[in-house]
Image (tube, rainbow, N blue to C red; front, top):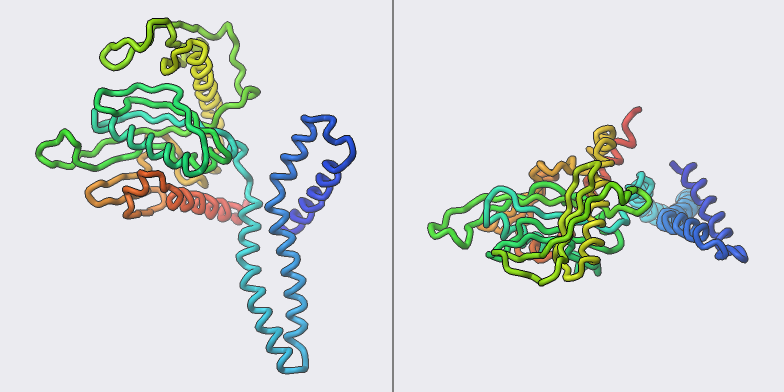
Length: 357
């Protein structure tokens, strides 16, 4: 591991030199590529340099611990124990930083929330989840834009799709894909019985333009008059857009904007992400073993979490974690669970790294 770190440190120094060279910025694309490579290595190299410094201090403390003078010898032993206590977690951090990174981690996210079993109660909980993720995005300084929605008369959503833009959005939200189950007494339940409903959440990395080639001849674009709940007219122009991707038969509707052009742009963005997801589906099956290290399969049919209102608890079934702060969790305080999921994923990856080939 440390030989590889030495090589990466050498590469980091090379990048520093290349970026500082006169005229380096004349080729903006190459400059951006080198700057990104350096940024990706920066934290790892900083920790590695700290590790090397501690190693030198450990060597000095070992010499002091063998000094003929008892006082100096005791000082050396004390310092050695302190340094070794700092060295071990730093080595663990280096191993974690060297794990292969998901190249999609820094991407924006398309969040798709759909009501499942449970009728109106599932639709209401879909609205709760959308608010929860919106509050979480707000806490992290991310931007949320609704791409498409299908609301119910009770304030719920049969479906809502939103783009979440922000640094590391996919890395933080990618474990949210799956079935979210809620147990509570619906507001329409007169007898006070607890009902169980389910909502499906899908978290897709926003596709980059270069990854999905959408040809105009493959698209069937239809415009129509948008309508709200109960057939109420939203506007008097044909602004709603439905796009059918003929080769895949994927259909996307967008009607939230008054502008046809904006609805078309939103629909194309959703279509691009869905096509990317489909293209990656075959690859997922080939790397199923590697994906076990991502805390659950991410399959949409998988029940990943239960929200129990009578007990005020949230249980994540993949890592057997239960917290009793449901109100705060639904208000966007998700980090306690997301951090645990990431740690579990990293621990599994480290175990796989150490397994014999």
